Length: 491
Image (cartoon, rainbow, N blue to C red; front, top):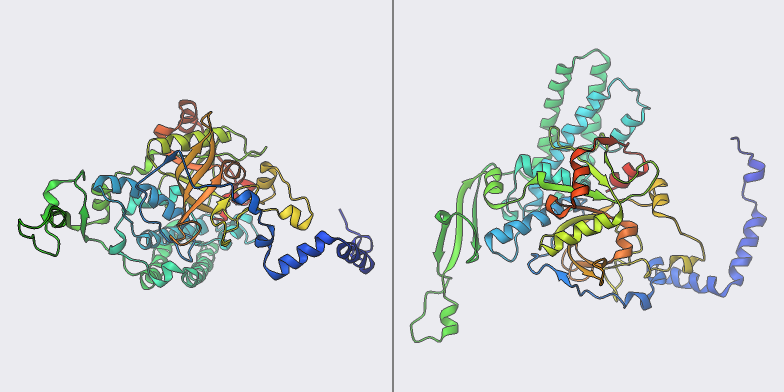
């Protein structure tokens, strides 16, 4: 349809009328003064609604570990997956906190993503540069973002190490500079691969080139993150109920020697032996097998995303987005929201944390001093502030790219009503203990249904009918640039 510029251009007189009408409204003047002197979120906050949300939950895990911090990186999915896995390690070792090395996971995630990108470039080498698949690949060569399945594949292939074995670096805490150089290198390599393919290079010749190119990626990662350990010594104080091989446990006194028998009982108790686990010269895979009872294949991903192009009770996958070549393919089952919620509730009732993803910046006053960490649909009155209609259905938000699963976190608790339906969720974030409310968010049930409804749970927490769909349905491919694909690719 052609556009007539004369009939569609903005007329100055029209703007003058709009300005006059705006200034005549008392509400508009108040909104203008509030926003220009503070910001939109502070001006739109609804304190009457915000103060109704409490961080009390009928079901809440007690031993959750210290809140982690992804810093200025897009590793939320890796932190959330590790927070699920570490719960099992904490139980096994009988400790109150434990943290895996996210820098170690980041190293192999970037290396695997680079390999997958170069493989996709080879596979699409016969397509023109204007092809949408080629354009999407070049726009997304090696982002920080990811999914639970990506992290699970990394754990299955490369294992895990404790955080102190490979601690954070400047580039893991703030990944933008490293990513810029990696993206430049990969696009440079894409030029070479496509040129060789156009000149008739065989698949084997392209594979040899790709392997040579990975050396440069490995070099950048080693400079930025340090070399990942091939072997290390695992030493940690464990609890009395630890369920580990006793051959690697010793009992030692604290720094002060035992006091005399005349000391009071409290002082004597302070000198009781500690149990120390020392497992020397082990590999990251051996560490995983011995101390992380986490089976990457034992998890089901559920979402609830209504829409004609992605109906409920269908299993979906997104080509070009899997990151570990040869790993389990990422897939997710689209179901009614109650199925997602009940699976998460079953997990929490059993004392097992639950990976979840959502569009975290929707209706969120992240930096509010008086009501930090509240995610609810009635706390931010943007429509009232601007006097405009912002309403969209959830299906419309997916179809028109308004919402996406931008952030992954971990469910650690839930409050239920009398019918067993959720009222609010306790959410462990990965922005550090000083963010939100002691590192946690309060998420209303209606907010999660509107902007979330994506969880990953163990198979045992999924009802039989849903599990059958997961096990038997074929994977239906959608594109990374579809509404559903965009919902994931923005993380």
